[in-house]
Amino acid sequence: MLDSKKVSLGIAPIGWTNDDMPDLGKENTFQQCISEMALAGFKGCEVGSKYPKDAEELKKALDLRGIQVCNQWFSSFLLTKPYEEVKKEFVAQLNFLKALGAKVIGASEQSYSTQGKLDQPIFEGKYVMNDEEWDRLVDGLNRLGKVAKDNGMILTYHHHMGTVVQTEEEIDRFMDMVDPDLVYLLFDSGHLSFAGIDPEPILAKFAKRVKHVHLKDIRTAKVNEARENKWSFLKGVREGVFTVPGDGDVNFAPLFRILEATNYEGWVVVEAEQDPAKANPFEYALKARKYISEKTGL
Image 1 (cartoon, rainbow, N blue to C red):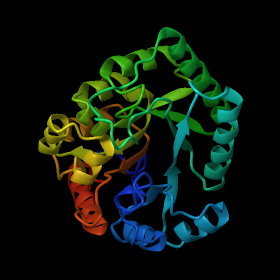
Image 2 (tube, rainbow, N blue to C red):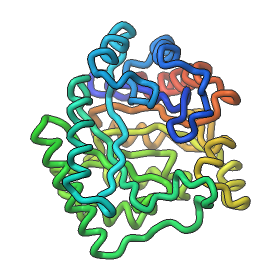
Image 3 (cartoon, one colour):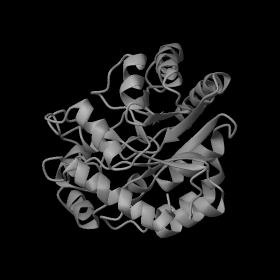
Image 4 (cartoon, rainbow, N blue to C red):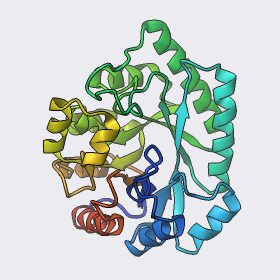
């Protein structure tokens, strides 16, 4: 069982509204989203596109429901933009999160990403960095990690389908190169599984360097369809590749055991982008909450 004094359970708003495909969940309001999160028993959330941009307004709405912001996605473009430009955007988001009481900011390098391209098969054409680009990415992230640390925050890196850090080899190289005191891992069970990687050995290898966890499930049959029919990442989302923990084919039991054995401290966050018209967000939030409670005691 996970220690509820050390581990907190949150959920991402992406089940209600999709930032990359605004038509998914366009009918779902911010107020409905966070109210249903609270009603389902979650204590934390990440930040979505419909959330108020004013930290004070957002914090008031969340405080009323007993919810804490725990992280927000940050798109870095360290390979294709000047570092100072990326840093300026990073600091602005860092300050926003800090004002909300969050401790983590989750970055993902979006230079050359195929995840948002509707005509790009997700299993084809992924960009592969050369040695100079690896050095540039790692140097930039180490510098951003230092900025975060100096501000009492933690920079985590989100490996992700369609990006420059997706494969097991890329994750290994990334973790070998970054400064372990400045850049941590955002572990995502769903993106590993979608990429055909067993998440258990990855978590076992890097558990002590994981500072944020996304609990995401997959439907293997849909992943196979995505591969065979050359779906884009977003087409896969729309068709139901992802789902909440306990509803798909990821084996979470060993992942929970590793988190327990390594005394993980931080947030575990249900994240499963689906079409809300097909997968009612509140229903699936309740399903995930029940499953995780039964398996972890949270």
